[in-house]
Image (cartoon, rainbow, N blue to C red; front, side, top):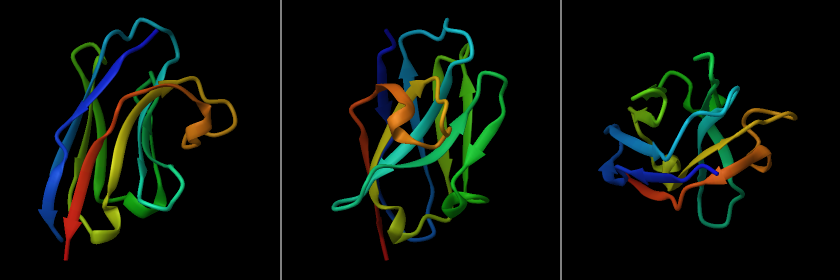
Length: 123
């Protein structure tokens, strides 16, 4: 069982930056993927960025070059540095962990989820 807790959301103007954090209760499982997902009102949850246990990162096309995912503290803290934010980045952002098979950015492939943190970008 992995418990996840996000923090760092907030409101920012277009072009601004935010850093999200996710504290994991443990990271002792082998080959564990951790990632950030988001869900805007009326839309399906989508993958934003994922990091493998090897350190390899995967990004959604919509955030490449603007967002950076990283880990620290023996991989028990997950970060998402978001820059050049756009109004379309407004969503609830979730931290997740699991062992995806069909696709690393597919929300349905993840077993553990945090409660989410809201990010609002105004134009």
